[in-house]
Structure formats: structure tokens, C-alpha cells
Length: 368
Image (cartoon, rainbow, N blue to C red):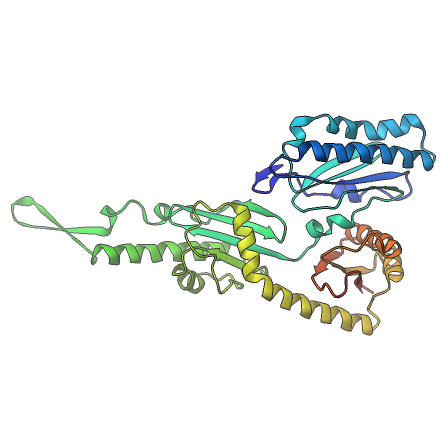
């Protein structure tokens, strides 16, 4: 669990959820819109309370006895009455429950309220936090602090710096004394002189600091990454940083101004405004490549065929619309949900595409 400008975000590791087998009994999936500020806490709790009642009815329809139904739903009922829990939320809440298992996860994306009880969990709304692309690094570079973040379109996480210097002083020490030298003069006194004017010295040492950070970032992240790095700093730092750092994908614009006191959520939003066009262009190329594979018989656009391929472990990459498949398209929704479950279980990749002209398009490329 972490506390950010997106509120309380629980671990987004859904390994236990995806390891649950289909066919072991009815499973309930709840999605509740929540509010970071806590001002809509009562409303969100009421939504979940009503969803629990609906889920109980659905369990009974599927033949689940009263005792087992209550055993499944009781941990969720406890959440409804926990007022402190509702005051500590993110942008959405996802809850999953079946006999012997339940999980409540505060997630940094907005969700539509829904409850589904079926023989499989409803995981499609989670795709934006599950997808394996659409990421960037953000380096907030200021003299007094250096911070490194890993960000998606919807979330941001601060990373440990490792070998990256934490501040200007860590690189150059105290100033201005260390920038001065001295020579002996008559009478045993010492005369101090600098390497130039104060402004020149400060500029030189600032450049030394930026170069040190740039080199360390390349060493820490590696030089074979394709994930773009966005610099948050004064604009003058960028050319020095790019020249010094071996990291291969540094964006050519900065989030301007000193980022020392910038909130992570503000940095995330600003970074995606900068790289959105290039990311859309990359997505277009990736979609064209996927369609080429489909036309060559190495993929499919048919949801039923894709779901079947997923059951066989053949999906290499599954592409889904970023805006989400409409629940009204029930057949496509169910088949796409099955494909997501099987793709994650068999270590395939998930991608989202932002083309709103194809709101229900599902594309899969196959391993064989």
C-alpha cells in the first residue's frame, strides 16, 4: 500500500486473483467508484452495500446455499461499515470473492460501478493497470533533490535511486569553499583565488552535478530500455543531461521549472501530455504490425477464436481498446474477459490502444 496524490493505492500484484481456476464455484467481482478526498465516502459505501445484496441474490440463483453465500460475502460486508476505510481511497475500488478467497484493491483508475457473479472473475476493468506497455520514467532533477518515478497513464510510483546522486551537495560537496585554491604570500599568510567568477564556478559545478546524475541514470536503468524518460527540470539542464547520459530514450522536452516540490501526480500528468503524441504514433505502428500478423494467419480479430487460442496458451499479445469494451456488447465482453484471464495466466502481454473509432475491437497475435 502506498499513499500518493492518487490517494491510497494497494499493491497491484494480482497473481493470486489470476491463479484462481475457472469452474471451482461462483465468483463475485465488484467495482466501486471512489474519491481520493473521501468526501463521497458514504456514497461509495452505499454502492457496495447494494452490490452485496445483488450478489447474494445471484449466488442463490446459481444454487449457492445461504451459509456459503454469507461466508463469501461477510468479509465484504465488514468493509461497508468501516468508515475509516472509505476515507482512505484511491480513484476506484475492485473487490473479488469466492469460497475461501477475497481481495479488496484500491486502484488508481476510475471505474464504472458494477457487480458480476459468474464462474470467472470480471477483470476487464483492470486492464489499464495490467497492461505491459504505456510506461515512462520521470526524473525530477533539482539541486536539492533528485527523484525517479515509474509512471503509467494511470499511476506513478517512486523508485529507489540506487547509485543516482540524491542532491547537488552529494556530487560537489559544500560551496563555495571547495571551489577555491590558495597560494602562499609573504609573512606566512595565504591568499585565496577562484577558478573564475562566482557565476562561472556555480555553472561549472551545476554541469558537473547534471553529468553525474545523467551517467548514473544510464547505469541504474540500463542502456537497452525502450521506455521513454522524461526530465522534470529547468530547460537548461536537458542538453547537458542528454549528452552525459547513455540512457537511449530521453524525451526532447522537459516538464519545465524546478520540480523540487512537485507532487507525483502532477508530474505524471505533465509527462503524459508531453509524450502522448509519440505514444499514439507508436501505438499506430504496433497496431499495423499486429494487423499484418492477423492477415498472415498469425493472429485474429474474432473474439471467439481469440478466447479459444487463449485457453490453449497461444496468445502472445492481446490488444484491447483503452476506453474499455462496452458491457452492452455482452458476447464480446465475456470472450475478451476470458482472453485476458488466459493471457495473463500464460505470461502473454496486454496492450491497450486509444483508437476511439474501434471501441470494441479486440486483436490478438499468436505464438503459434
